[in-house]
Image (cartoon, rainbow, N blue to C red; front, side, top):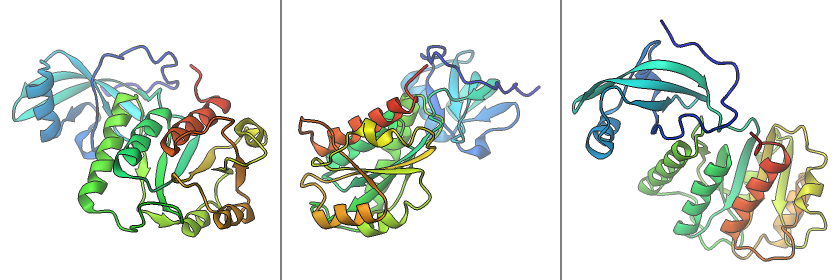
Length: 263
């Protein structure tokens, strides 16, 4: 019999916290069982050394998670029986897109990892006037590495979906993508309003866009273009943060203010 779907997610986030978590393709999941990929089979057998009878959590990248029992554990294949299916507790209801100005590799990867843990749903790399990185095309190997970072961070942070990662776009192209958002914000040190003030009229927002600039900040022309599109400027307070720090702090504060950090 197929596992029953719970209507409410686990609010505490404490149950099953020690279970290893794996995203799998939809083709790997049937009504009653899961067959893991060759890479996951290798990891479970040779790295984690799990045995038949132990449990893991399998994620289908649609917001659901499946608690499963390892029934067949062989180096050639691992088969799992689905014990329970439920909504992933770590997936925010608010869909936040981070329009992050391109950064040096380590800093950009830091933003991808940490903002995934915080709860970002999508990343759009943006090429701005003051970006050190001005390339519009990402090498395939690097793009795949970034997607791996998103996947592993999603597993670690109990997300139910892996954030989407777009190809880099120019700043004006990024602005053209914001028409369907409920609220769009841009970090500007000289802004008169803080983040809480900007969010005061966005309490019911479900789709939020967040623009974070490069080390040199946004140019005045870019700030003016954003304002013409209805993007709200906010300041991050009296302390000066590095851009990668600002991305994580702003993303966390937005989700906190909108009730997405509560159990």
